[in-house]
Image: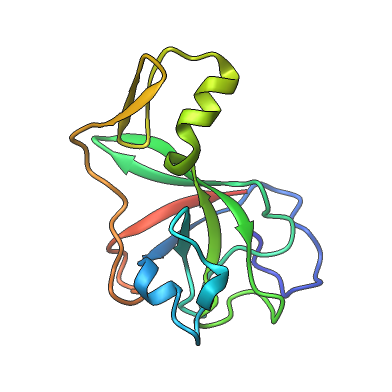
Length: 149
């Protein structure tokens, strides 16, 4: 995760941060991202303390399930107002929303991705812990995901 101000230098070393997951209902409020956010996206950050920044696009949003880290999102966009802007969390493309297409393009017949199992080209929900959304960003370490870029 870049930690510099918008327009600042890109990091030379891989960085990571724990971000609070923000639920869709909160992230899509007018004073957050409003209609710019879709259900095919995941919001994380927005606490004004830590977020994605310059050069993070395409980086992973990782969630831990049963001790295994999985890629649940891909950095899509953040605030042009600056890094770590309150109520402007980093927005990620939700991998599970596109997993059928991804696996079709890759020619994968069976795979486990983001709490889903792919069988015969179709995603089926699997019992698994999920990246939970909180009602509001938290700074106590609960319900956080790891982002590296």
